[in-house]
Image (cartoon, rainbow, N blue to C red; front, side, top):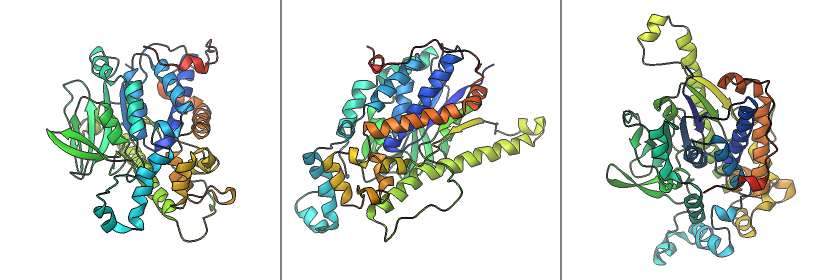
Length: 411
């Protein structure tokens, strides 16, 4: 019997384009193996920008290849203005206004009744998601068996808890762990907006939980166990796609000179939020698997733990270094705002603050390079992928190379 396969997509703003490259390569390898029917990921869990990709796959659980083509079409042609207000007026209304708090102070802000909620206004993203994602399909896909569960994680500013909203068969009860809980919900665009609300950069989103309204932000915050939702939804083997390097290469890396800018500090904090918990959770799962392998069959029968086969695909290059090459692709008002917090777009100094920019660079030159990297990293792991899924690797694909015009969403 084929084990239930789960997919975990982590956060990272524009870095999530890398995930789409991995999914594109998986779709190709699957077709080459002659597998065209069924959903390779009956269990899908996503956080932050990964939640948006996860929801797109869940909405298309009855046609995986088509769902991946839709993601490719969007991510290959992204513009920052599709995610947040990138025009001069929009940036002034949010970013410039927010930054005045560091100069004019709270007194002036209160006197003007100006309490900006975030650096950027991501209302365009909500419009885009409503156009592209038919989330109303998810319950019927679960009822029909094409999907076993979808989990979207967010962080409650109101309650101080990490919350996983999930849709799954009714017999799967919610779970509770220390500082993290799960609650059944009919998943909507608001859940995706909350999960992807990067702290300080995008505004918090109100969601109902147990009949009470709470404000939520990015699901990567306080997410101590990113893999856990997929396990709770019944995954027996899990593919994890990261959005940043999990292990740095040997040797010293040249450090930026001088006192760190606000952008450098913010980028460092975001990397901690998006990357560190995943690395720790992967190590934890690997230790559990190793411990279980040392137990006898009788001992394993007496524990609630079970081994989880794990495949991790993460960038082989530093995404902030790639972002540094594409800073000029950002709209001029956004670049001007980022310069004010220390993101340099001068060729000799682009590494200062490039980490922060790597989360906001929703521009095609950057996202296309990340997609290409995801595809290349996955093809480099071809044997591991084929072994993980049990796909034959000797069949040749008869598919013609996809054209961009093929990637339009259907009715």
